[in-house]
Length: 278
Image 1: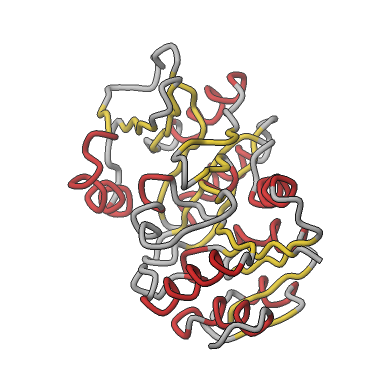
Image 2: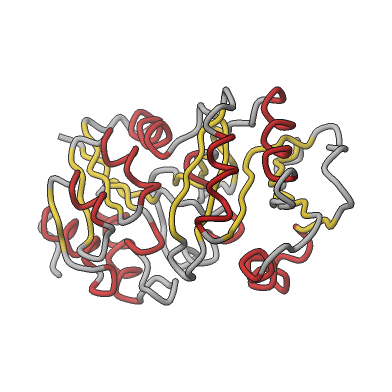
């Protein structure tokens, strides 16, 4: 039986400092050499995920931005992507703007490049998101006065915002009424803020994981996660595995609970199942 192992990154595969350990890199490369089907499914984009994965090889595509992209790291191209429906864009933006919030909008161009539009930095969470990326990704960001104009050939694929739960909850209530979208709303792994991520209803970690499994003709999926945005993927997998540092809602649906993310528990679990020395 060909099994696809697919793991969330932050809080699951990565250490708590947001990096992939040298040990994990070694094991992932062993998986590649021995034909073990391994991938990742993350909320990160190709520009923030791929630098963390530059020392490892994947024989299957990876899932980015919560399923917006199925991405081939070898060829550095999107195998598949999902655009937010045009009918939903204004409703999403108005939900934020009526509460004085200005989200980040990610656009995928016909040229295969990603760009990020931002109007204002309303709080520390949004500023930190920008500051963390501005030096290495300054070319991605385009500061604008408003979102009224999207250049032809630029396709909105993802919108996000960081804020305290109470501030975001009224926006979430509106988003629940918007058709043709999905969103993830959960506590950020690296701050006290909550994060909302909005994308096409056709995009999800679950759908993208199944697409990846079909791509490599896998018979089953074993998924690993720690946070609320992983639940849909875990529920759709043949086996759901939670790390011990996962939130309770994730642990409650898991078939198996392994060690924590700082112990490289995901790669150790996969290695042991496939007769690879730990």
